[in-house]
Amino acid sequence: MARSVNSVASRARRKRILKQAKGYFGRRKNVWTVAKNAVEKAMLYAYRDRKQKKRNFRSLWIMRINAGARLHGLSYSVFIGKLKANNIELNRKVLADLATNHPEAFAAIVNKVK
Image 1 (cartoon, rainbow, N blue to C red):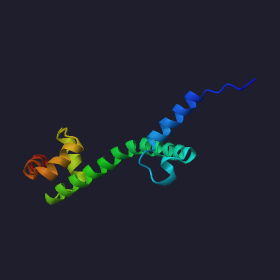
Image 2 (cartoon, rainbow, N blue to C red):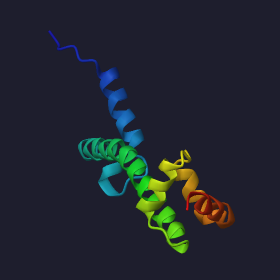
Image 3 (cartoon, rainbow, N blue to C red):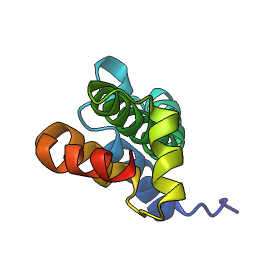
């Protein structure tokens, strides 16, 4: 008796992976085993980097706030400490935007905490 295999599901599974590998270079886009590994690795990178993106942006915001604060004679840590002491609750994203795009507003905040 012939062995029953679910070729419909197998083909669908392979097609799904190959569709995800569309645009990859060389055999990564059309050879099943190579594409499967490439897509799996890409998914791992995507998962990891969604977390890393948050770290990278926070780091960028801190650099921008530090640069803005130093123009007014304060270091980043002193500036953030004074913000907390004066109960000014602005997050780093907003502070960084003010420091880069609205320097007069940032200067007003610095003068308030000094």
